[in-house]
Length: 341
Picture 1 (spheres, helix red, strand yellow):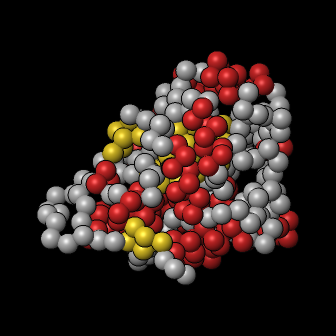
Picture 2 (picture 1 turned 120 degrees about the vertical axis):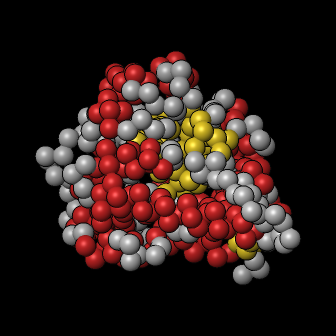
């Protein structure tokens, strides 16, 4: 892995190593994969505007997410079925995140129970939540997560129905029956969930609530009006509704609509530290990555995830310095501009 110099090379190496009928689940998108490709391509439409003659002798990447101190403005997005890539699965991912001081978002479709993950690593963790048709199961899930020390609930709201992922269909992807899923499945996600149900979730847990899957100003306004603690801009990695905006393009209108009343995060297509800095300039508190971490996990388990986080951390630090900033908080809207293309 030491010969791999960037996230793109990790992704290519993972695609070459992992059985196609498995890697398609992590690599692919919905239908024609337009949004999947746009998530990456859209970063090219935003240019950085560096400032010169700034003292960047000391640079710190440290920041806070909902008051929790983290080592950098980059965390791990939730992605399911990690045991398909490494037997240690979420335990390996959370250990690597904890060692790096980064925040890990644990998926509902985890193959380890939350207590096991807490025992594996004492680092900042958020819980990604799908509300199941069996609401009692979701209540038990929330209670177990609270007991296991999670810092927030990330309610994923862009999956009332599962998108059509044609690579999975074509290659015959199927979840092996021996993989344990303790907290629910995608086929049992409740499609009737509405804004009114946020009150039910609030009553079920006192953990901060983040909504993941917001891509419009209209929903950002509603999120703020309903008192959420964070908004996570995401199109589900291009795996749900094909043809929606790239996450980095949707970010500005969500930030504008939230008007500083809640923290805003973003995922989708991040491959470089400069991508993260562009997100900071557009108003995100932090960015999250999924596929790069999956590639690291596939290639080297915990060590692979650690290496991916290390590469991105070093790129973020370099990008900040060359931009003329010594901390994430110094990055502003003046540091980025949209190209005419």
